[in-house]
Length: 559
Image (tube, rainbow, N blue to C red; front, side, top):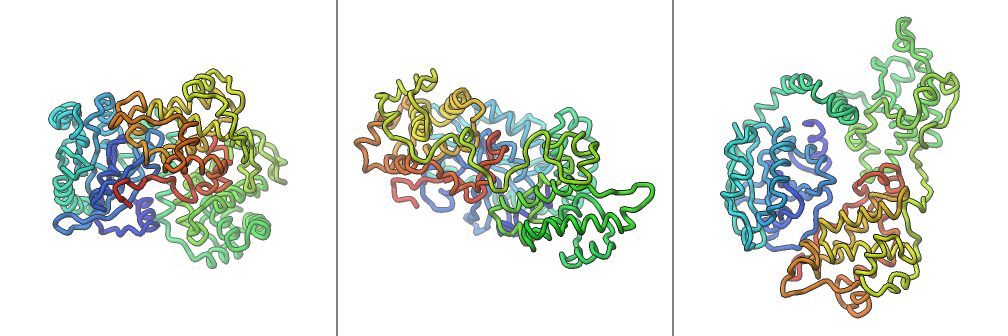
């Protein structure tokens, strides 16, 4: 992942010689609170991070360390590994008050994080946060439960464990001192380890049998990662020289990457209408005239449908991109669209019979026989995006209590269903169960109710936005166990109808009203091509226009 990390560092302006720390752990362990307590010197109320936060902080000795705080939601934990490369010190956060998930935290640290090759020898600090809570486990108890002294993954690495109260700053100085000392030493070791890259790749190849057992999808992903690494390391001619060599049949390589680059150059320069015919023309002429493609032992023939498929997918990726640098730098385009490395992606849309065995598909464009290609100018699918822009606000209010609303929602006997009901469902489960259990109940209920129209990314978006709206006034309850838990001063979340009807001046009421008025708010965060795509409907896809809100201003004057 080293080359991918280098490109991400370039995109986000991170210098390669800076010290780098990674804050990681399960959700709701206090990583973001600690980060902004260090950075700003004050407490901010947080909700679970979607994606990551990046800040550069100074230690007491004026050493600058760039901290990457990566969200710990279980849906995005598979993305952790993309942040490992180049890490000088890893800080793993533990919620000292959460005994039920200590085994889950141990499994995440010892079985998924530390075994990764990119973290071999990386220093580890275990931050036992929330030590001020009355039922918090002692640091020594957590140390024993995690097996820090005995687990094989802790050998040959510098590590420490310490107590912390992120909201007060207790323990942050000790953690920063360890980070500074470990980062300085780790950087020297890391520089030497980079020279062993060839040997590390050999070790990864030796694990091929194990990777095969993890399933076809995971195997393809690993192969695509390695292929992308090789592609990014290639030295490219300028775009002008590349097209010139294409026209005079002097390209010395004719592979999948070359096809993608031809489409990318001509589409970014001429657009789809003028660029697509040029792609067809130039590829067909090259195949008919180049010595590379006319070799008798392995003759290449022009394939109209295959060419159309890849031009379409490159154009789709360009249109969906929020980062305009994908239009000016081919390698940046590849980094942000690694799925295009998979030369077999057409099999998601075409059968082998239709694409490879039917001679018609070579002569003319044939439509997919498995599923439609992703739409560049998408039509709104009401069954998937679920709501109309204008919903009568009286329907759910006709059901007097939130408890009755949830009962009828789970029994599928609500008198109507629309955008307001989605918002109220999220509100009721957050109030009743808190975020962690509430999200599970919310998603399970919507799957049962919406059936084939269930949209993972849109439904998660609304739950996150309702969480954001409620966190300012009811953060302790929402981030805890809901009204079933003990809130500070005996405070409880009011009924949905009561909040909107008699608490107009509150922050949560105003935010919820804004959510009710705009059922297509997600388009401020997602491009239409992304949110209306099949992938976003089937699984959580992160916004491509701007990140979901992670922080809520504190009531104590935080920013």
